[in-house]
Every structure is written in structure tokens, then in C-alpha cells.
Image (cartoon, rainbow, N blue to C red; front, side, top):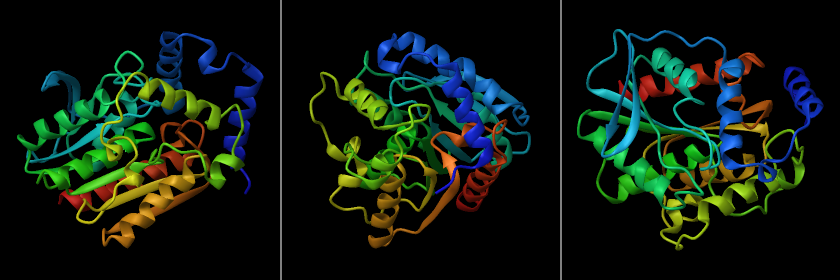
Amino acid sequence: MSLDPEIAAYLDGIRALGGPAIWETSVQTTRAAMDMAADELFGPADPVAKVSDTTASGVPIRIYEPATSPADRVIVYLHGGGWVEGGLKSHDRFCQTLAARAGVPLIAADYRLAPEHPFPAAIEDAWAVTRWAAGRYDRLAVAGDSAGGQLAASVALRARDRGLVLALQALLYPVTDHSFETDSYREFTDPASLNEEMMRWFWDQYLLGAGPGETQDHSPLRAVDLSGVAPALVITAEADPLRDEAEAYAERLRAAGVAVDLHRYPGMIHGFIRMPTVTDRAGEAIDEIAAAVRRALN
């Protein structure tokens, strides 16, 4: 495996900057750093007609509405950030661009973050927003990246179990299991990118002080039965410790009879979809997600 040259140069720059590990600083500093980097990594967003902030069942949301979007279809988007960081700011330009390219409204959910709000706060908020959207739109897709991909997958399982029909689950390099026993975890250990130490820290913050709850609510790969869930798009990055568990989830979905499109992006790292100023593959992936959403909702 060889890194894409643009990605390799980006990681060289991260190493040159240095700085403490995420567990060596405050959660507030970690969150602020992610938000500050977001616009520079993404660049300009595609335009939409309207952006508005409101709440859905008490959860803050931001709604992006393209000019010619249908009023009866919507994407619910669940941001990444290890359940600890990320939010409306970090994913603003990405969500706006995805809404514009898909041509349908997008609801970004600002779910509660750990460690202040450990499991199951995030999944409860994600489910609350999804149910709220289902009461207002006829056709609904859920999507998310990284930890948000885990939430989207777990929301799709809840939807099946509780009779809510979803047209699509778009899972972008998702977390699918509270485990670190994969080849990709052993292979990708670069401190400049996501690695096992970081993921262990994220999981520790998320599960801190919480009961075990429903395993499929935080580790969908451990669900006993995956049949009957929404069709899935699963995007993975080749140089990502989460690659193997995400692809294992896609294969389990297929084995259960679920329609799955699985696409691994060669030479890419975790988080690449929010980095169009670093790599053109980010824009290609956004186009792929937008096309899948259009097909599913139309």
C-alpha cells in the first residue's frame, strides 16, 4: 500500500507542526482545533438557497435547502469526531456541499458529545432527530462519517426494529465495533493520522460511566441479525485503521441480503472526505455519496 502523494505531503506537514496528543490537552482545545481546521481543509462550499438553525425533539440541528430540492425527501447527517468532537461548525461546508450536490435538503444533527454526555446520549439524539425528520418527510436517508457512521448504522438498525423505513444508510469510514483486533489497526499506526491510541481514547470517553446498553447501539457489527436494514453505501479509506471493521460490516450486510455498494479509496486516510483542498478524491467521494442519495430518494 502506498499513500496518495498529496496525502503523504499533508501528513508530513502535520508531523512538522508537532503538538500534543489529544489526551494530553483539554477536550475543549481538541474540539476548537477540529473546528478551526475545517474550513481550510474543505475550501469553499457549494451554494444552497437557505441554511437555518432550529431544534428537533430538543436536539440542535442545521437544515440546508438547495434551490430546487423536493420538499418530501431529506438526508439526516451525523458528524464524525470520535463522539467527542465535531459538530455544526466542523462539518458545515461538507454538509452544505453534500446537500447541494444531492439536490435534497440535509439535516445536520448537533448531538451531545462525550465525555460530558457519554453513551447512549449520542445515539439517543441521533434517533430523536431521525424520528423527527421521518414525521416531516416522506423519504429519508441517514448518513455519517467515522463515529457518525456508527451512529447512522445503529440508527438504521433501530429503524428496522421499530418499523421506520429508510431509503439508504451512507456510512463513510464508519466505526462498527468496540474492538481493535484487525489487520488495519496493526498496519496503520502513524501518529499524524487516526490510530489505535486515539481510538482507544475516544472509546474511553464515549463509554465513560455509562451502562452497557444495547451493543448494536455502539457496535453494529455485533448485531445478531442484520437482515432487513436499509440499503447501504459504505466508503472506506485504504490507509485507515477502521478500514477492516467497516468492510466487515459491509460484508455482513451483504450476507444478510442487504443491497450494499462498497468502495475503498486507495491511498486515502481517515477523514479524507472533508479535505478537498488536500486531495481531489474528496470531491469524487462527495459526488459518489450525492449520487447514491439521489438514486435512493428518487
